[in-house]
Image (cartoon, rainbow, N blue to C red):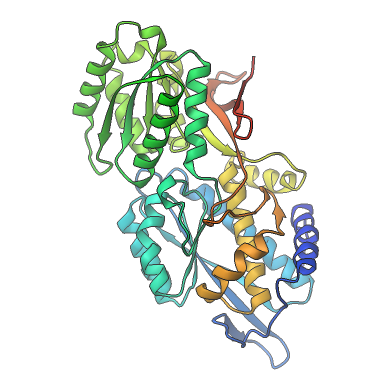
Length: 423
């Protein structure tokens, strides 16, 4: 058995000590009110499985992200089980992955497949996916933990815990950045789903409250294959504004959508003459980088995206090195949050001795109040959304070798409302 790495050990020392000190529970018998799976190996030594379902996008418009999140989850599974083994516990986490196909229907189908296996702990990806499974999960005694859902309209008391802060804060980060860079007029093209609608409304409100003007907005169907009509309308909006030095386009899209939109937009010189902005829907995506990254950089449109980020702490070092070795990418804030979420819910299940969604929905936020991990303090607000978080500004640029890469160029502090960009 290999020794516990420094990342896991740091988390354990912080988590276990604080959780025990808080008195949130004891390590109950796995047979007391539990739905954990007990696989007998010997009379004295049994493996008590904590089954966790993880929805990832392995097909569809978000398929570039899916393998990255799967890798992070697998590292968490290995580290948690190393910990259980070294303390002599019979608990073991077992992850079950399902492709949500980047659609709400795919997410619901994945949840149904996992529920049929008796799984009560469900991790979801997007806001649309989370919204699609909420009722089903509630009816089937499941707790839902989303590692990337941020839609403001889902900020309600329910059986869902979101590991990122709601988009009311991202909207401010986007609006404040555009205002900081001299943008006073914005044309917005946005995805017509829970995430897109919520972020659009919140960003519009923030930008208008600063004195900005929305010259027009285009809501598109995420299931459409062709966006030529929407891009034509976008070109008409941009053409109608005389002073284009203060005009920008904000695209609130997912990677597959945005690639189609930008490829169509390249045919309109007027659209390539203004600055573009994006969001966490496309930030750090490998498809956007590899398929149209060169075109974006060559066009000079900028295209700064916003990413949920977490302050650096030394717990991140070991994980980041292992993750980058496996994926070639640095971990995002959502990646770190997913890793922490698996740790936290696994330890909560072990302490309560159950995977019942009803029980864990009560216990999980109490445990999270005393959990500090790779992504920092995992404290939830009254709606079950992460209470604290900040944002980074990320742009496609060429590195020293000429390769196009996603590059952090600044950050936004939601507490002070301060935009900071690298010189």
